[in-house]
Length: 387
Image 1 (cartoon, rainbow, N blue to C red):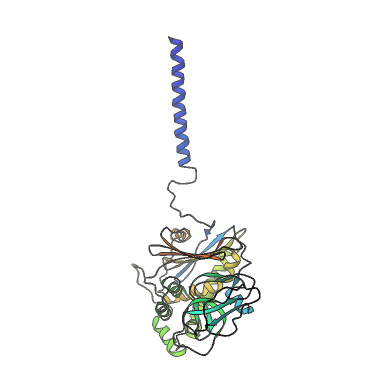
Image 2: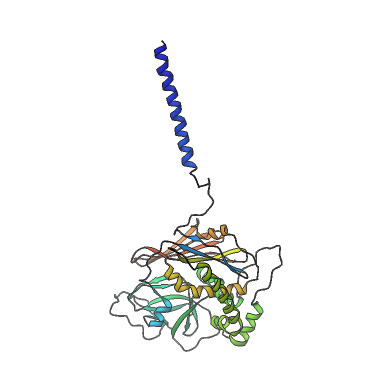
């Protein structure tokens, strides 16, 4: 009897110990060291991390850095293409839009119907795919226009219809060619073009300076550096055609913008100097205590190319907004690195690019993915709608 009891008792003890060990292992997996349960930090898709914000008056710019970067040297930008003559942008019906010997023939729309406010014709005569960003301004033609959507134009492509918005309400001259693209319009105007896609909203945003409503604050709201009345005075004095470039780059408003941008750039350069093994690939931008915008690129080289134009565009928005001297939290800024969960729409040109917009509440995420030479997200814009 005693011999049969001990093996059974021993077996029971072993089974109990194994059960405890299993439970302990499960508990260990569920709460790994250094990772608090239910970590609220949003997932960063590109291995991105934020540096401390660069602040000046009512703006905070969080540099986005990463140790991994794509090779974007095969892409041509609009200002490079216009400067070299490899890219031609013209009014509809203009001459000189012949195909090159590298172009394949295929049915094309009729461009001879004459100029149209919201459509130009673009030819990419280079051997590189052309990157276009919503809000890039092209000067000349019958009116200055801005690109309506992010997209990529294949090398050697046929003349193609290019959706645009006018940012010069009162001019319709005899010009047909567009010579330069040195400006990206500020976020309030970019938002109207990229999301609302309405010409009147674009014109209204140009005239207003900023379309953002001021969030509730216990402190009094300080007046913006450049008031709506000053913008109106500038239009009356030097920009009767309501030309974006004359309003925001002229002596009156432009002087405030340039001084603001220079101060911000000095701080940004100091904050991002000395990085080892990492590059700045984007920024998250807050006005007052409200995070409003982010631009992130596939490489540090691409960010460096667009940064001077983007910096100035953020400065235009800042001088037109109330001077709320508050700093947004890093947690709120990190939220602009996450992927949204919401309604999604896509546009695709096979073998060239995919454009995707995702909406979640007041947030909108726009991503431009190149499909050749290898898939990569060239540009990622996340914004908080102002209305």
